[in-house]
Length: 325
Image (cartoon, rainbow, N blue to C red):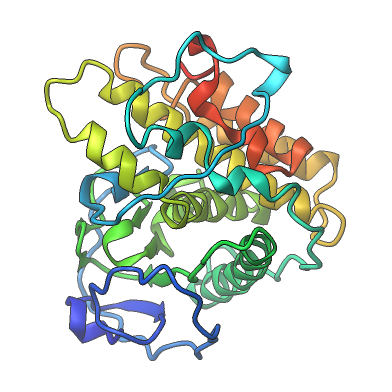
């Protein structure tokens, strides 16, 4: 996908071959690594961004089809399943009994933390691409072992404003997002630093990136497609609750990856504390408008994912309501 195909300027992208808005074929393709694109930095100012750490536009724009298979695992703390899943009927098993839960633990990955000067765009670019390379390897191997189709996401790491199939960026309060329409990971190189309180800790940015990658995992598993189909009903009273379960699952899937690279990255007790503090900070502090989950639950699901390293442990769709508030 060329930058001009989707009207993106001032960005760095690494993409698969094919059209800008091509939908996933859900078939194995040879994996590719493309070199860093040429960057044209426009002399336009970035819109101000707030404190929201990440946002998934994917379910609003997803056009994919979902398929199902069984199995699940207990939520954190040994919490029992709800009396019934949050959605019943044909296709609901894509949330609660998805085949992505069948693959066991993510294999231990050997990925060293890239050097990072968080105030230097080139350094941040390389950090994001190297970490995404590791995410591609870890999740690609997992899906292959589980005998599930998987395609690596497209990467759009921006310096200046642009346009995606899911809307213009940056948007107020959004430093990073995943767009299912073109399987795109979107992160603003300067925005995520500002959004993260000018954090100097590489693990904070690794968490943010792997959260958005978690939405890609959901997309490849068919979860986002089904979520879109049920959340599109404007008369539903549980739309925010569905969104929270999706976002907290992405936190847990992020934890799966971070746990799988803990030995090599490395992620020791200090790095873990920084990650969980960041996950908490990115939660919803207003109980009246929660779409990402409470700070406590955001941190809890991240820690649970790191400890278990198993997507089956990230089945937020069967968790008690108090665990997904």
